Amino acid sequence: MITTTDVAAAQRHTVRTLVTTQAIGGIGLSAAIAVGALLAKDITGSDGLSGLAQTAQTLGAAVVAAILAAFMSRHGRRPGLTIGYLAGAVGGGLCLASGVIRFFPLLLVGMVCLGAVTATNLQSRYAATDLALPARRGRDLSTVVWATVIGSVLGPNLSGPGAVVAGWLHIPEKTGPFVFTIAALLAAAAVMGALLRPDPLLLARSVRAQEEAGEADPGTDDRPWAVILHTPLVLAAAVGMALSHAVMVSVMVMTPIHMDHGGASLEVIGLVISGHILGMFAFSPLVGMLADRVGSPLVVGIGGVILLASLVLSGLSAPGASPGLGFGLFLLGLGWSFGTVGSSTLLVAATPASHRPRVQGTVDMTTGFTAAACGAVAGIVVGTLGFGWLSAGAAVLAFGVVVVSVVAGRYAARARTAVQPVADRA
Image 1: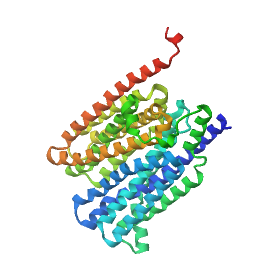
Image 2: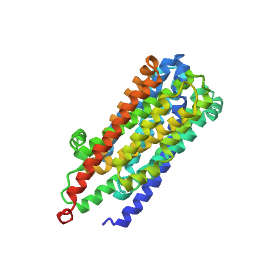
Image 3: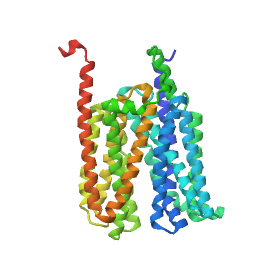
């Protein structure tokens, strides 16, 4: 017999384990991303082809998200998340090998495999909610999201030590950071495989089996799109997440180009991007607590408003460095945090428990493809019309986030009314 005390203890252990693996895995991933484009340019000699490295990683994350979700739906979180980190370690090895033998297609394959780490980190936030009480879902989910900031800060700073390691190993300088990537992702896989016990998804199913006799087998659902399209709150969560991520990615990836056009130094560009990352992750626990207190739809709406403010500041900034652009990029990250955490908690709450892993993976896949497409279009817009027009176009998507929050709020209010006892409504 599984008791409430058992579940609470397992949830605390799950969150601690996920925070640890998220931090370690984030170090490995960000170390690779920091030099991926540089290694691509070093191999090909082309600025244009260098951008394909990040594109490959983004597309890999989108594809792997659905595959991992389907696997975890049948076998649990622990083996799926462990495999995700192992796939990333293989990707780091392929990237390192590509730099040694100077073979660009191998680098792209490696970056696709590294996308598995992004997918794993995204799925980890959902694993934090499997056993969470409804009143704490936002807090637990956002705590795992917050751990990403550790890797995001430390990983890029391994480029210098990576060059030293490359000298020791007699490999090209830009492949050195991938040594740290491989080591960190193997460590994350080891921690996940050893410590994520009991498996939160499987334990949650056992608890439900005690409470609800005759529930359908959760591993047999093959129609996540049916759940998304026929459940208004799930659809709202999916659209809100995709739009928030598309706005963030499309503007963020072109900001260094916009600053470079104005002669900003690499150090200043790095400072602006660091501020953006700080906005994305540092305040996520507060955002999660707010979602638990006032409701996910309102948090998504606040995110949309913050995104609109960031786009006004960024779009009106002249090329180069400026306080307005720096603060705009910080707000871009903060708006993404509100939109993503709010949409994620709404998705968990609105999706039937037996369908969650597949639906979550499908939503992450769609979000990844949307962001990749918008990132590609962003380069064309900036190249032909300018950064201001990119911000204006992104503002349309940000306004869509606000609309989604209003619609979701109305459906959530109807759902609350529907479950009230008749006596309470009289």
